[in-house]
Image (cartoon, rainbow over all chains, first blue to last red; front, top):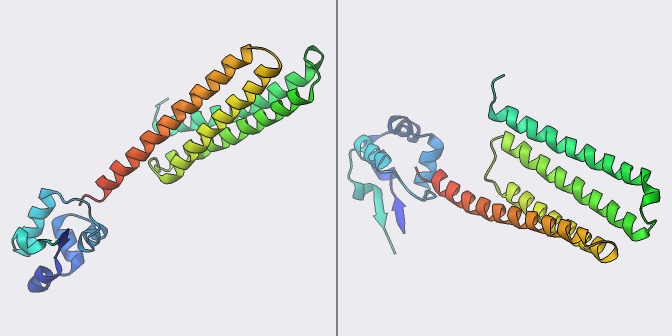
Length: 66
Length: 142
């Protein structure tokens, strides 16, 4: 399964979840769905925005585990 | 007058209520023309049961419309309502089969009509189930 790891990058940037949601242009509720691995899919545009705001790579955010 | 979906739903609700009133009226008319119809316990039992089915169906339709008005379209409640509606149609078809057995082959045609209606609603219910899945997939796409 794919897990979404935003917390580490958030901590590095010292940004709050609400602030990140606002910068990306999604609701805090949707960001919460993403963080808690309840999302079924992610748009490239959202992924791009996450990488841009958190200044990290896709591999830092998405992780594959069996 | 500008036509919009709220007015359309309102009109549908009026039609549902109007249908209920009509079916009540029909029952009274049957009562008035009583001498022309065989005084039969089965006849009145089936008439009563079919009225009950009509009112249950109309209640389900009204609930469906109310949900749609609140923009709650592809939800499990509506799937349940549609399933119940299809069973009401099948029950009505079964009742008319009793009429056919007792009275006239004409009622067989009505039974077939009601059964077909039930089939259509059942398939619409299946469509709704798929639509709910697609909607959920979409809702959980961030």
